[in-house]
Image (tube, rainbow, N blue to C red):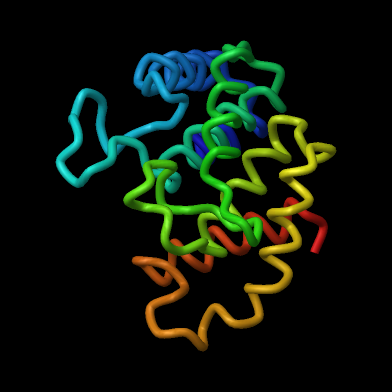
Length: 171
């Protein structure tokens, strides 16, 4: 969605706009009842969770970008996704893997950065939780390369998530 939105931003192509709107509809269709998103729809709970915040972040970022481009999105469903992320914020202000209790052991700067980006694109910068996440990222980002495996399951995704958070928090 992010890259297709960039193409639309520059070309204003009707075909690209239709594809983006179709992606928005698909994301909403595949949203879980909790407000989060899963690896794939209707997968069940193979690992004691359905939703995971890496996917939830990218879906909300996609919806937020489309909103910024004045495309129609389902605002209520985007808000439901934001509420899911809020349930996933730990005591320090970082985002857990999932809101499911089994997966709330470690707050992660990369997931937090993605959530910061989603909040910003959906005009939630004034939300108190946005400020908590920014504070967490400010504290943890200088250390992302010093903790064993801490950056993320994938270093490139970890760097990307932190960068999205830094850019969208004005850092």
